Image 1 (cartoon, each protein chain N blue to C red):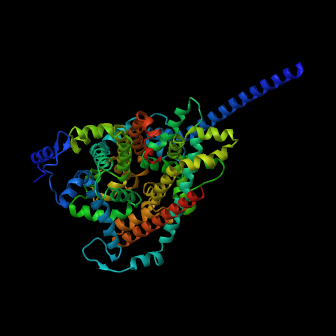
Image 2 (cartoon, rainbow over the protein chains, first blue to last red; image 1 turned 90 degrees about the vertical axis):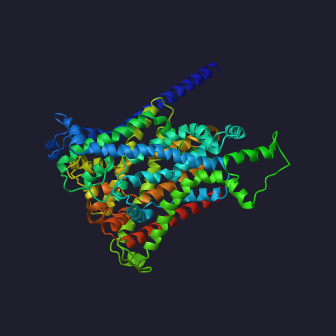
Image 3 (cartoon, chains in turn cyan, brown; image 1 turned 30 degrees about the horizontal axis):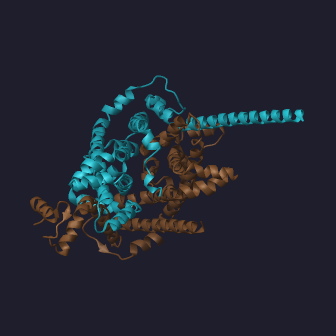
Length: 299
Length: 324
């Protein structure tokens, strides 16, 4: 009798131990796997940084150089001054700052109407707005070109900014509306009873409460405008166009005048361009990864 | 006029006496006035949206529909050609069917790749370890890099003397990647490039996982459900609305993929049209060849096709919902 119980206890111990070692092995395997994936994903970026520091000979040479013999930090200086990237950077910043203010403000303004007011045609308008999300953007391109041409907006930054005064996209309005609806309505009602008009309620109650969603919208607006080369490509007519940074990089890439020997400068521009979104990401990673993205769609 | 500030105050005072509506002098409104009064606040808020949709969406849409029936090249002379644009696209255009096939191949392979690889990675970073936060950041990092930058980078890595060909040379192989004249090779290299931003799909699934109550998994585990059963019977149905929404927007977005403009030769068409896809084809027809009417017809065909695919998706969803 005694012997068997001891045996059982031993077996249980052994089983637990084995389970523990199994878990440890699993854990190590998973970490190795993640580390490998991480290295594979980081390598291209590392490669880009290295290439941006190479001399022209190293870039154009036939054999592959991974780490430059002597890092050429002057490439960055060259990029920012000689190539006119600095002016392009200014234009990009103008577009981005305008949109950073215009999109969150107009999107929450419209969303406030949907979330807190009742009016004739509300549901129909909302459904219609959502259905435009399904509309391929290419269909509006050509007539918009005609429209901007007759307005004299071509070759300027206006097409990249003015349309964003109208909400900046259905998805932002949709997210802001869902967010506003998830907030308690009591504060709003209290203000209403105290005699606050709807505009006042928007500016002093709705807008401050929307802060999390505004941060989310702003990050997305920054990223989409920062890397947007297609918009400028559409509305540009000739060299008088105030080029944005992304378009400048695109132009230097596709234009045949610019030879392959400039690849290091281009890579420097690439590194420069990825610095800002990466910094934003590190600061706001919680909001981005955990995400308010689709909270409204849970139901 | 009741709408001025002073008269509004007076009207409020008339209507309420100590918080109780006074029966003495109820203000009489015509129906129209009442309608306007009830709605003006809401209308004021959505006015920017109505203007925006009207000017930047509805008007261009109908304009392009009209132009698609004309032989319009951007100058003042244009004449109606009826359905000829559509007919010649479908029957005479030497590139259209290749473009169509390329787009379909890209869309219907790329979207599942994003979903599946994103799911696998999300499972990995959903493990309860302390170091997970770090790995999530590393995996998501390539996604924040602008598309143009990754286009440059991968264009260089895939070049004849680039990293990948040096690697392949170790095994005695060589590939043209983006420069390939073979659609299969060229577009598959785009998938390889897109795997770099696998973190996007990961985030999608992670936020779907987060919305699922943990009790469901615990209960299933007690009942003896395996990993796969839990995925199939809990994860999928619970995250279905969100995943469905994302698939639909992803499909629509992917149909309009124009990233090839950055790294493909011949204005984004690739060598021998290997990477020529819908959005780029429309762009080149409209803005390089100045065939506005023709390009409008192309974009309407794209709209119809996207509409059909979206319709099928909704139909599939209702079918699956019914089974549950």
